[in-house]
Amino acid sequence: MLRATEPVGLDFFARPAEELAPVLLGCVLLHGETAGMLVETEAYLGLDDLAAHASRGLTPRTKVIFGPAGRAYVYFIYGMHSCLNISCEPTGRAGSLLVRALEPLLGLAQMAAWRGLPPHAAPRLLTSGPGRLCQAFGITRATHNGIDLLNGDSDLQLRDDGYKTPSILTTPRIGITKAADRALRFLVAGHLCVSGPARANGR
DNA sequence: GGAATGATAGTCT
DNA sequence: GACTATCATTCCG
Image (cartoon, rainbow, N blue to C red; front, side, top):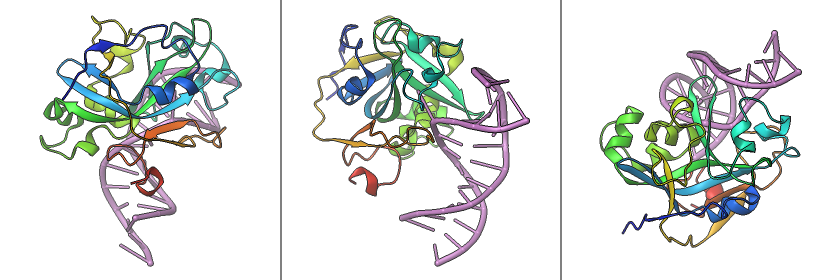
């Protein structure tokens, strides 16, 4: 069932976000006893993408985006939520992917506990949304920002379980006001665990 | 089923 | 001092 064994290589990540985002659908995020498969991502580019944090240039907050690929960029938003990104592009160039939704695979009860939900809450409530999945995995800026997702010793890891996503849907990004017309959101068509309204997702 | 709203704190101007 | 890559709740139809 779960073949989450192969770490993903670094050179694989050192390319543009819009190219990498659809490819990472089907990869597995691993944190201790919990694991989830990526079913929805968004690409954020560099200086010419006004919706990206990195568009304002290098600041203390955005330094991970400009750093090496395959690192976790975790930021705190709206006073209460964390969001997880994966850095890409070679060092010195900005680019990242926002992880918007996962399909829970292992440790569902653990995720529910982190979310403050009953042990058998519906799986789609656990990780469908960037804020939700961070809460379910216990990911915060303080604990995970900047860590190497490709290192087998890391607390949080990204792996390739060889799953080929049958059908990928592309839509504009969600929750932004600038550059909102660019189709840089990628999701597994019709998947139960993607965020947003069902009709727009082929469900 | 869908729209509106409030909570709440880090970051940058 | 304004803004924000969100979520849960509360309405309304």
